[in-house]
Image (cartoon, rainbow, N blue to C red; front, side):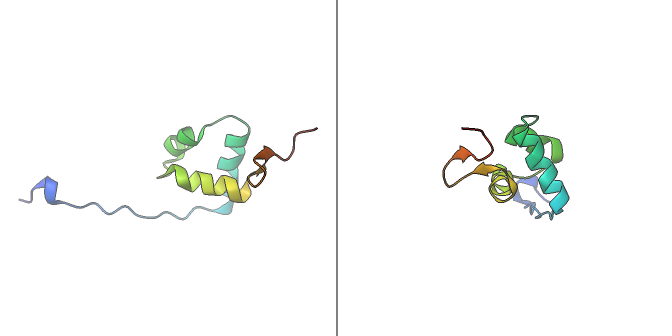
Length: 72
């Protein structure tokens, strides 16, 4: 019998569809979920994954750090 302390469980990287990523980003931007809530709801392994999606697909202007769709 092997000792459980010596066992190594390798985490696997998951591939997500573009539609799924956009759905998660949309729910976060509408305020329906937080990043942590999205990781729990959808089983996403890390907050950095969602942060990257927000930067790539979200409406927030990360360079100027202001929402790009708000009226002046």
